[in-house]
Image (cartoon, rainbow, N blue to C red):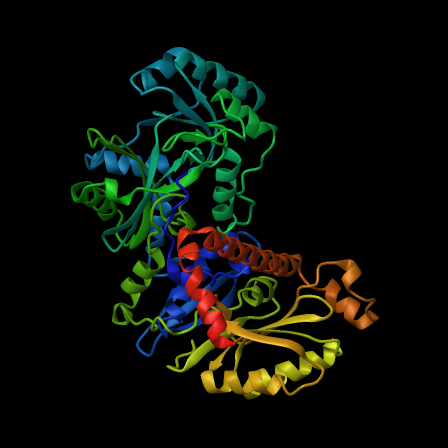
Length: 541
């Protein structure tokens, strides 16, 4: 792709790995409310039908409280959500209101004549799905004509009796997804086969590295990076390329097969206001559906469209992290609707970027160890600074941990104490600027601490205090007593992966800065200003 997506700046460095995957829905909405000064609490819910615990959260101020599950509030009509989940039913409702819909039929027989009578006028190819319930269908096959449909259904009926099948037209058409809140289209995206765009200088392998650097930042539970493997080489070979080829400027090179997973691409601005209004009016036929997603087919040349389905339980990750285009602020739109009095109530640009720990929410609530968690208030103070302090020490880590923690609490710091290896440590702190410099000076008085440095920290900071043991090399870690070994064993794999990722990100940042320095030294401006630097150097002497 062009590898220039624009994501929301407030989410850069403020999404913990525990909030990746489906948890991103709840986290980003709670985060948006929290940074506006609203109260946020998480509760342990239990679903009898599913036989498991789930997380719901409450956003409130002095006037009202609103309960949410994922990113949907309890004020959304459950009846409308249920009606929307039945594709066949919702299409009948919309068709009766003269809304263009994707034509479909439910088929229970393999009789070719009957199948022809139902789907002969459909646009081919068609999608065949097994109907397991009114709200659930499993897409299994596409077919190019009635005969192919009959053959497939006949085989399935022989293997599985009493099957019903949903046949839908236009199986190869591009789908679009529009998120609607309170009668407004907040964003639209489509899905495209992953590709990179040539610039005339970089090889496919180099462009792939750029693409993967973006992909690994997306808060997904799966690895979205594209591997240089035989599958990729086969895809490139069909286009007369290899990994060392340098595509022409603007040339799109596919890096995954058409049948593979696709990338979200934001396309909101290709739709006219008239088209957006048509999508909004569709939700009028489902009273109380305050927020939803409309999935539809669309011809950009004619503006012809047909509704595929309405989703009353949509995720929002693809709107927040498109691989191309601009992120759409769905969480902002939702909080604006439920708490309009908080519109624009954000922190100043100089306030450090806080986030909250989602690990305890995900683990302790979902596993029924806690019934409720209330987030601390978002920090508000004009004199806050964010600093990174690194040092070396051979001092006992347990004693060092206690000393650092006591100072964090006494000075009301937020942040982390990171053990990088047995002798190298890092502190991320946010606090009053006077306290931060006092703390730095205090550390410099300790003989057991060496090579102490302090720099500005521009990343996110966890509210409260957190200790992270980031040592990953076994040879770097001495044998631990049984109590410590037991504590390490009890660490979740998610935590360990999060710590490893922090180390990788820090190393990547260091390498990027080193590359920038080298590029600067090679630049023309560096060469031109060389005499000036020499004069300054002599003056210092």
